Image (cartoon, rainbow, N blue to C red; front, side, top):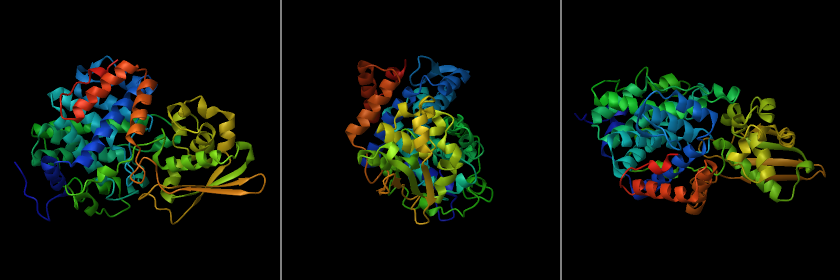
Length: 456
């Protein structure tokens, strides 16, 4: 049954009403089209990695659902977990700058898994992706930075209820069922950020676990299981549990919902590393293009937002010498060093071997930071460097926004190039790339869901 919406209606019911009724406009649909291409290709790019193999080997059920890049087909829950983990694994997936959160790996993985299980068409898939992505982005704005401050990963926390809404919308649950699904998700949402200590694999798992949780709670609610309707705004709700340092402002979540689609501002990364490092890589590349050589540099100091320090800059000595490729993705000094040296920061720049390069470590050791109290993070991600050179001169470079985001979206050609490069990295040939492109295009256009071209 439906639940009437009034000013005193629980937030979950307002979100569920949106999920059950929303019709995304063309611009939102275009962003979701980009999402499905990006996420599937990223999952295939990581298919041979140890963490993806471990996730695949942990799967206990075979079934009708695709594990992108693999011949083995999985049960519903395992497919959502494996694909979400793989898509987020190299931190090359989309990001919402206001959060930051990574919606695509969670939402696309959950919705495609249920689509194969239930025989849904592309129209249901794309609507579910739009609903889940929009809600996940908005959830991240309610108490900005407080989730990280509490040592939780926002993608993991808000991914579960957003995926619940996405799956509910895709399979046609009613308002009460979707609200109850989100209520249940509050008890399955989890994910701490201690992976920063040693570059271990748990951040990768967060997206897959959230996708799996979203599928599970939607089916629980469909079968009559209940969760608290006050999951977000209750005395012991999710924001109290996972973001206790700030009073939640739910206006960012519910105001203009269904009228304005903020997912249209989603950023697609040009570099395979942490979101907030991306503008700093642009600065480092610009410094190299200006003619400066690594040996010319005495020191580089960056102005940064305080909220980024504990994840991307400290402990600074450790960030100068990341222990493995994954840890390198969350070291701004290393990311700047490899960007300066290679002129890019793709998948090949973050191998375990590359981060041990003595020349990169020597350059990274010259990079430090100063907190800028006026930095706009998390509303906007900027970059800055001030390089002192051996001849006594100083070069200062600023990047006012993240390329790939709302201020400078990647072009269709750049997105296509990224799609093909990721598939080639994963071992797909030209003919198979074309077949997968056609299959994903058919889904995005509302047609049949056939993911056989993504198996290997």
